[in-house]
Image (tube, rainbow, N blue to C red; front, top):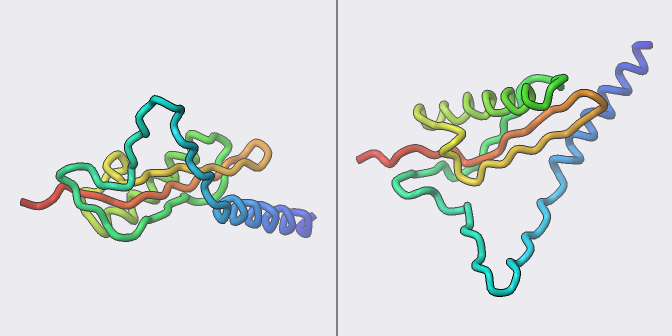
Length: 120
């Protein structure tokens, strides 16, 4: 039985790494006659952002995707607050949440550039 549990953990880890390594799909151009959506790569006015994106995931798989998303945000926020004490997920540049599911369980990864209000 322990061999089955170990194999299951290896498969879950491999699945999580495979999902994280898949490149994002290319954006489709807007339909003719409609303006292109605004790019999210620029920081909001009055904010300055860190030059590297951070990723948070929280510990283990959760039985609820909402719990997994909250754990990922909490982990991301802990890392972001080490850079900017007033960092917030809602002010992050290019925030992205990605979740993987394994049966009834899920694990999410929150990625984004931490930002803060520019000091005056």
